[in-house]
Each structure stands twice: as structure tokens, then as C-alpha cells.
Length: 264
Length: 223
Image (cartoon, rainbow over all chains, first blue to last red):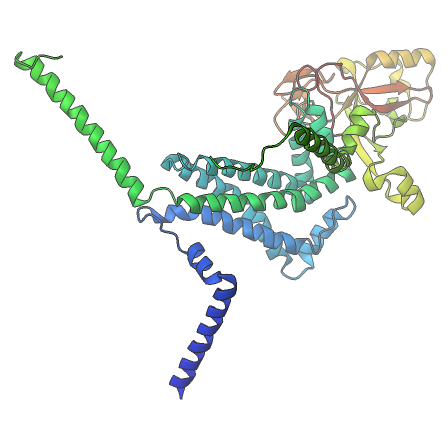
């Protein structure tokens, strides 16, 4: 009885999978997307990129949730954050995740960059992926900067004042940059609206395609440090060392015996 | 090499596409760009300001202490975005009055008050010659640090007072003159007026020398 149910279920599921595969090719795609050979050596350090991706996903999810209660006006912004923190169920958790994962995101991005830099993962043919990564870094810095003001408390307010005024030291365009960020010539309602628009729409919309490009380029060339790449580099290194040793021996012979072969 | 263009493009086609492209591009880009850059066009090109250009009362001359500068709050009304004047009047929410709060430090230059200050009480009016004496001896400083705009405080260390910025440690003396730290210039002072009622009035205007922004001159901006 159980055996029959089991075989029927497996047949049904196989039929469903085949049906989907035939129409969308999703099974092949999943196989392609899910399995990527990763070097055995130091495998854990290769999870830093995934950690960044995970934290960004958390930002997107919790950010969408926070938008249900947050009000981007000077009179209501702080109050709405207060509501989220004190009245909304699990509000502290949702905002806490948004806050802390933003902090950890910067740390994870730094570690990820350090890992790629010190392992030489930015070298050909992966230079473009490094460039895309730098664009992503700038977008994340922009998100951190604009998100800080949205709380509209003393901390975020003065941090943003300092940040905006740093822009004013740019030669020639300093004033334009400042007025663009302020939305006028003084900090006020327009500033909050602007930072809100940039934080919740402009930069997230910009960051998504670049994440896509980053992942596409990663999969195209594979993770740096595959066995093949290592063996080739190590054999080159050994070859070089051997040649250097030969040169050393030849010099020694010349010095001692004086009967070295004539050089051409 | 990948062949993108199968047919040869003629000169007429090229110019036609170019012209059409330019017009379409302009129609597509000018409105959104101008929409986003409205504040720059209004402030930098047309020279409008969000902050009210009227005179506002700071405080009475007799309130200014000698040993330490005294800070006064001045609320400059601003019309910006949904806080614009028309919207406030038409929607009847003017009680929420949008403004930018400035702290103004009033002090006597080098701690030397005018001679008549001794007997002066709050609310007393003063004569024209006394006004002139006040004008010579008063400092009307913005508390926005000339470095990055943080609010400076009056701090007394080892019996000597100085303005200290909490953010990066800019230090100024009682006249707002630069002493130490990162600020590129002295503290900003307001355009002020001492009137016969004995009060000091300020405009949202600062002593900014003309020059190249970011290189030879800095405005207070944010506040």
C-alpha cells in the first residue's frame, strides 16, 4: 500500500518536474545556477561574497517592511520610527535587523574586498568584476549615508549635516552638490524627501542590476583559485625558481674552477 | 569582429538619425533632469533662497554677558517643498510653521563691554551714540562650525574660555577668530543691526567673501 503511494507520488512529481522543464527549462537553469565548483583550499573564505548578498537581501526585505509604517516628513519621521520601535509588533526586531545588517554589511564588504585583493582575484579576466564591485561599494555607501538621515534624530541629522558639508569642499561644484543634496539652500523638508527617494528607490533600483552583473561575471569566469589556476601558477613559480638556481650554480662554477665554459 | 551593422549607413541616414536622436533625447532627458535639479536652478541660477530674508530679533543688549558669550535661538521661517508658503496658507497648517533653527552667539569683543552697559535693564531703549558703541564692540556669531557645520559650544579650560566644535575639535576665541583645528576660516558672523529698542536683529546672511566655492571660499550652507 505504502509502496504504491510512494511510486505514484514519485511519478506525479516527476511528471510535474518534466512538465515545468519542458516549458520553462527551469530544472536545467537551477542545476546551472546552484552548482559551482569552489576550490577546496580555504573554502570558508569564499562565503564572504554570499554573506554580503545575504545581508543585502535582508536589507531589501526589512526595508520593504519598514516602509509600511515610516513617514518621510519632518514632522512625522521621528514619530513613525518611534511607533515602529515601540508599538508595531516585532518592530524592534525588524528595524534592528535593518540597522545591524547595515552595519555588518559594511564590514562584510570590506572583508570581501580584502579577500579578493589579497588573493589576486581581481586579475585578468576578472578586472571588470572588480570594477562592478567598486560601483556596488559606492552604491552601498550612498545607501548608508542616505539611510542615516531618515531617522530624523539628532544623531542622524548632524551626521548628515557633516556629510553634506563634506561635499561642499569639492572645488567649483561644491555649492551645486550641497544644494542638490539639501533640495534648497538650507536643511529642511526637501532634504528629508530627497534622501528618502534616494534611499528607498534610486539606489536600490540601481544596485539590483549591478548585483546581477556581478554574479553573472562571477559565474562566467568561476571563483578565483580553482585547482587549475593554482597548479598553473605554482608550476610557473617552480620553473622560475629552478632557472634561478641554475644561474646560481653556473656562477659558482665560474668562481671556483676558473674552467667554466666560454660564454657566447 | 562582431558585425552589428549589416547595411551600410548613408550620410543622410546618419544625419537624420542624429537629429532625431538629439530631439528624442532632449525630450526624454530635459524634463526629469530639470525636475530633480529644481533646487539648484532656483538657488544657484535664479538666486532665490528658501530662508526668509526679513530681520529677526535675537535678544536685548543687556542680556549679553561679559565673561562668556550668550546663545540665543532664532527661528528663520523657510519655504521649502511641502513647507512652502502658498501650501501652508492654503491648507491652513501654518501653525506647523517650517523653520530652520539657528543658535546665535552674542558676546563683547575681547570681553570688553560698552561703558553704559552697567545700569542698562532688559527692555531699555538706547540712543544713537550708544548703538554705535555697541556696533563697535559686539560679536554676532553663528554656532555652525566653519569646518563641517556642527554646533560649537563655549568651553572653559584652565580658566580660559573658547569655542569648541564637538565633531572634529575646531577651536575659536571669543571673537570667533580661528585658533586651532580643521576649520578653514573664522566663525561665520551674521549681518546684524542694533536698533533703538536695545535689541539685536539678524538676517540670514553671513560674512562670506566671494571666491571659488570649495577652494578659496566656503559658505555655511546647511543651516
